[in-house]
Image (tube, rainbow, N blue to C red):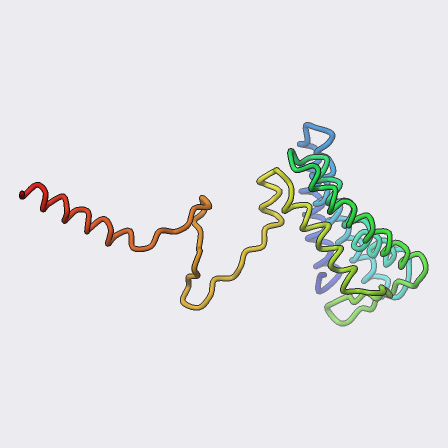
Length: 204
């Protein structure tokens, strides 16, 4: 959410332009759903600029913003990953099913209840009546992040990977290197000990 109309339009235009480039560079039709999110999110930011211009409240721009943010993304992301990602297709049906159920609940909420927007200084607050909000949020995150983590495409998994913060002291047990192998402790001491052993053997 931007701090002003210009703060919404500028990044929205830039992100949408990046999305156009991503879509134009797609070589396989099945990769289009994965390449399109920057275009979708850029449009989403521009819609928020329209919401701010309208002063919030209810209206077509507010409804369009809520439709993209709520029911569209939890079904778009897992279906796009399923279409584009190689391998693990059976596992990906789980986030697809979760995303479809979550999107159905959110779509019902938008269809039966009001969607409101309120400009609060530099921010815009949105109001939607969603029952069992923690459960719906879990389904939302499970569908979007879960699909990225379960895919067989390593590049897509990077988008959904959640790294644990490093604990006090700047290190933690079981730390891993960038290659995924455990960090070896005391390597310098081992090398010195081996060198001394070789020196004793040569002296004998």
